[in-house]
Length: 100
Image (cartoon, rainbow, N blue to C red; front, top):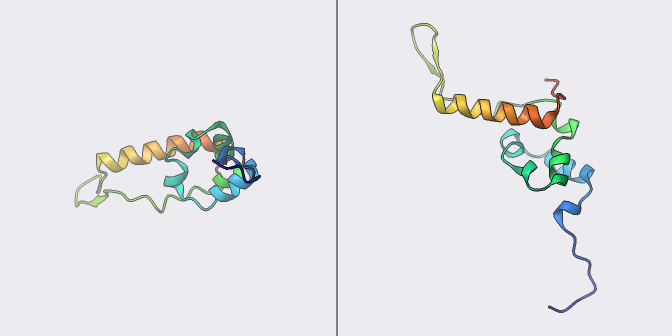
């Protein structure tokens, strides 16, 4: 390859403030989908408190079914496991910074 004099930078070399700003555009699924496992810089950026002020669970789809008997709502096993996984990862990455 011919060297044109340009410097090639890697994603992990981006400043964590810039990565955190980019990550602010992601939803809860994208933040907990494994981007924190890309490299240590991305994990550090994923732990930025600004990303975790509010944990928006509105994107979660559930298998809730209204039934006429107690407990009145049935939660499907799949949605229960998904919610548990997302919450565990979010609580880990937030380092206790979730306010809402």
